[in-house]
Image (cartoon, rainbow, N blue to C red; front, top):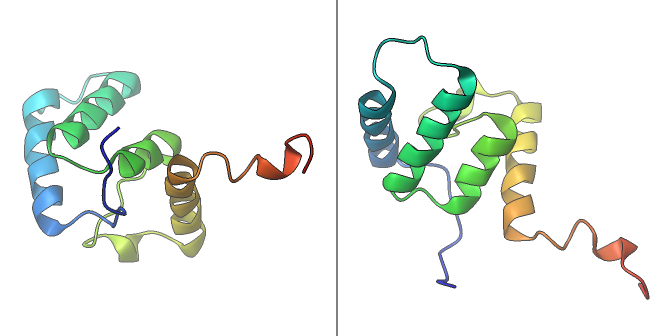
Length: 102
């Protein structure tokens, strides 16, 4: 498995590339079901090289957090998003205490 650098919030360039790619995938019709839109956004995120932990956080929270929109989220929302990133990066940490012998 390829090692990746620690994830950070999306850069402006990634945000713009993501929005451009999403507009190509989803279009401007707006009538697609949420599931299809979410799937299109995940595909767009992956195609522009967004870290898999950030994609996972979107899948868990529905939030796309970037350097440009940090001020739009409440502290509780950012904590939930950050926790989702952590779940991806450290999947065993949450359940380690419940393992036999611990």
